[in-house]
Amino acid sequence: MVLILVFGGLAVVVAGGLVAAVFVAALQDEGEGGLGSPALGYITIEGTISDSRETVRDIRQLSRNSAVRGLLVRVDSPGGVVTPAHEIYTELKRVRESGKPVVVSMGTVAASGGYYVSAPADMIVANPGTLTGSIGVIMELPILRGLLDKLGMRVEVVKSREHKDIGSPFRDMTPGDRALLQGVVADVYEQFVAVVSQEREIPLDSVRRFADGRILTGRQALALGLVDTLGTLEDAKLIAAEICGIKGEPRLVKPAPKLNVWLRRLMDGMSEKLLGVPQIPRLSYRW
Image (tube, rainbow, N blue to C red; front, side, top):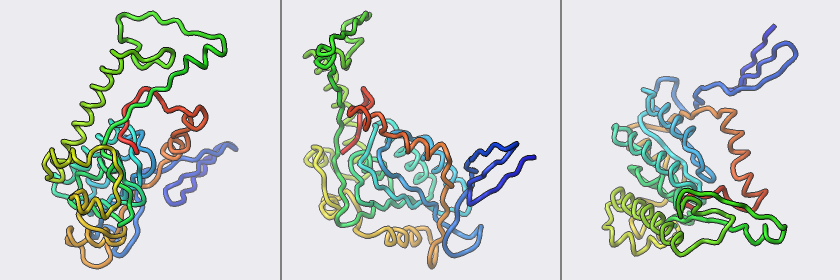
């Protein structure tokens, strides 16, 4: 006998004495109005951005919902890895260009990659004390050679050409390595600056004046043109409803959490916490 119990998107399957839990791909609904009435899609981007797949999937799912008039995106992130941040940015930009407004509400932190994913919004709403900005790129490469020497261990490397093991933790960085990696970081930095300049309509030279990695409060960001107004999540929700032509308290439609997302969040950063070093090598928009 197979018994399936569903609790708000979580299906518990009981079969032959075995219990398994799987999240059902469904939408969670809250607020005024019934199903089918005009609504806002609600997405949260929280913590370190290390994978874009679930967020992009959720954005697409909501944007294709005929009842969803626009997206309200809550960002509370210090940033993360470059490529996932860019993929989320690209998907939000696609929604905006499709004609559905995107409004971002910044929480405690929306810095570096957290700002990058916010940039394509029609309206960015920050709290006065939000920590944002930190426009820049960082690459961290731990060196373990000294530790291995103390343990009496070494790693032999056979490589095709000089830079094939660039960034290896088993040897010191050479001047040539550093020059090459600095070029990579500089190129990605210029991409970040260009995105900010384009999305916020700020001249490139003006962006570079404050794009040195510094953090900014929401109020400072407003003065520089990086956000549009100051306010809370509730303020952002009302602003989004007004832009989308929704009267009264807007209905929010949320993607249901999935089990694999929960497991990924549980494991995210585990190697850093256990080993004290990040996954390497990687480029990050991170504060």
